[in-house]
Image (cartoon, rainbow, N blue to C red; front, side):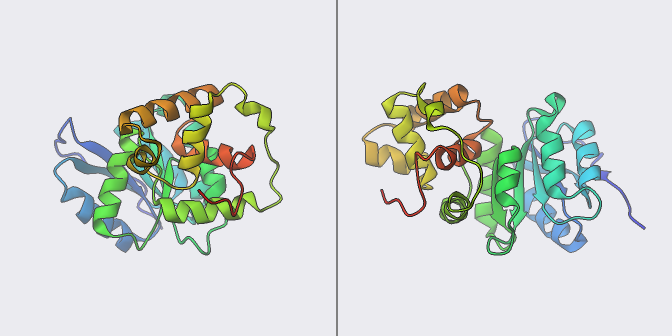
Length: 236
């Protein structure tokens, strides 16, 4: 028997980033809740133990970010991510997929479905809080080293690619920024290499996302591999 979705009814700081936790393990949810609620600018507004409950909660809580486990009973995290990201009423919700990097073959599909990034369940407290803030702002792809490794594996698979002509509408600078991002570099790291300000880097990446119809930076990175702009094994 399940308890279904639960939401926080106490007054919530209107300026805080609102987070929903979706994981079938109560202990993991409790740990994440304690950590997130300890940050003054973040608050957990609901918990769900399956994907269907998570989607229901997101419709009622106006959450900004959902931490989504992949393997859950009923509607799993991958299907829930697709449903969330296809719903115009939930367009402002950012999905962070929680996974174990070496074992989870579905994480790339989650990014393609619209997830904004992913983290390992063993992530450190500071990294988790920073990840929630980054995704809520629409700014950064999470865990760049792990992202690079997973996307390289994805690029080496037999997945159907996208014609490189899709990049024709980008400027040379936008393609350059896209390639740097696909190698897992943060805006600050790209700025240092390209002798630009972080804001200028962000502007180029945002323009590339708009032109390619990418929901966020995570999808932009996937497109970099699918179009062949970046290939597994490429070096900077």
